[in-house]
Image (cartoon, rainbow, N blue to C red; front, side, top):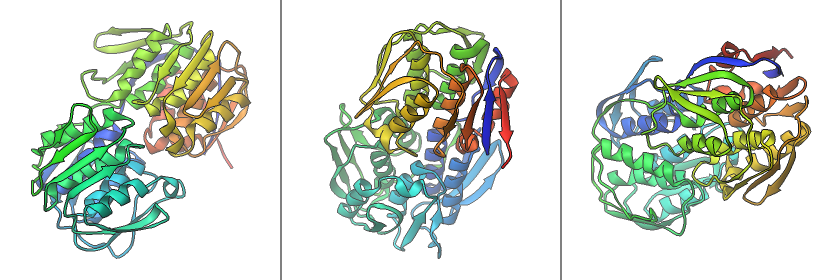
Length: 425
């Protein structure tokens, strides 16, 4: 569904941020790998997380779901063998983690997804799984793919281009037959691995990481314990009402955020404060108001999902904003570096690509335009924020792509006063 955003209104009100996608998907896979009933409270209820839940059911977990709580009775590594490929939709996180988990079983299990999922790199993970005893087949390192085990364990070098390869192996290898050692030369997005390690600890799994997070010893033949946990709110999602507040907010309040949680994307609030954003805490909520932003240099390696909204904020800031050290942003649902540069230029931005980021020369008024979301939820939400401060209407092709991780995005922003119109074909 295409959207048209009519700028001009001051935004005011409260948004309760939904649950974390990263936490929800890890919870689902941990529930699958345990024996007994795990309870996931306040999960993110979206296309990506429901892909994870459906995949767990296809592999043999018993699932009882509502919007408030998901109950998963896991099967350890005694998986069912689906006759057809398991459809993972658009969820790259699920594809990486469940592929490694499926390699623990003895039967061949196949996975596929939509056109976007078929562009997500998998070769680094498949190579590591093959080193550790699994049989892997793929379409030149991409989905559709299949794996069969059993995953025996051992020693391998892990590609750190995306942290999801390491997360997948860390979640699967405790159930392997032997002890394992993982080594990396580098690691992007290290904070996501910290979330994984926290989940393993909560489920009674022992892993020995080196302090630099480039070496891991993993004892084999462990068992996941069932758990009960409330999913924390998603900081990567909170970045968009934060951005809307500093661009067009009279007073936008953001609820549900736990700044003690391990999500690296909470750093976005520090980035915006460094840009002179008007942000403060009141009654346990973050309050954001329209601000005169200033540019700066931001290393986004730990927070690649922040690149789209930070690129937008750079357009509204005085001076130059440099977003650096985030090459993995080119490997998401689309090449977010190239796509954000292209679409913001359509709106009048002065923006230049770097191999690993963007340079934005701010202070120019954005204008109305027809732009593309590339079927990428974070680009759709970021361009909506850009439209709120533009001079003239902005049409976003497939604006509803944001529903992959934030189904209530349009409704929540309308409640703040944004004018978002759905355009019929």
